[in-house]
Image 1: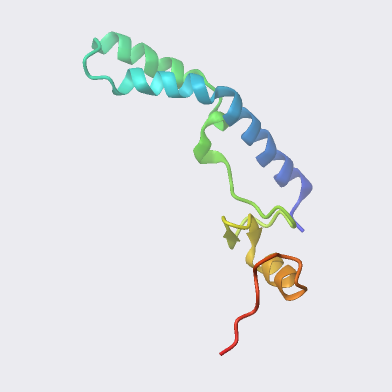
Image 2 (image 1 turned 60 degrees about the vertical axis):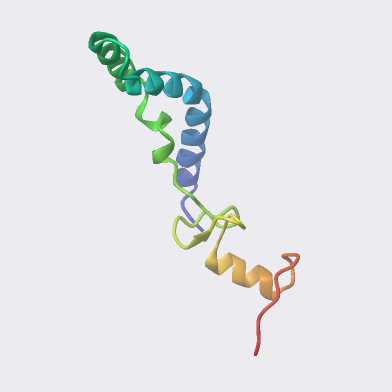
Length: 101
């Protein structure tokens, strides 16, 4: 099991990303628009830098929904390789069977 504080920090980051997503997207669109004057794009860049760092989607870590493990995750199942193997072996994940040939 991962530390509860690490999992909670990641959840807080997810909430911040959702809260500031529209504002960040609008500012980034202004920054990338080359037809706008440089000073306006510069101000948008400054406003973007004033937003919380944890509101960037890049800072969210993919974690296992079962154990909170930060590494070895399958995006499709949102589980770590270890939890996936245990649950699949027990037959608790529909459609997943152990291969043998």
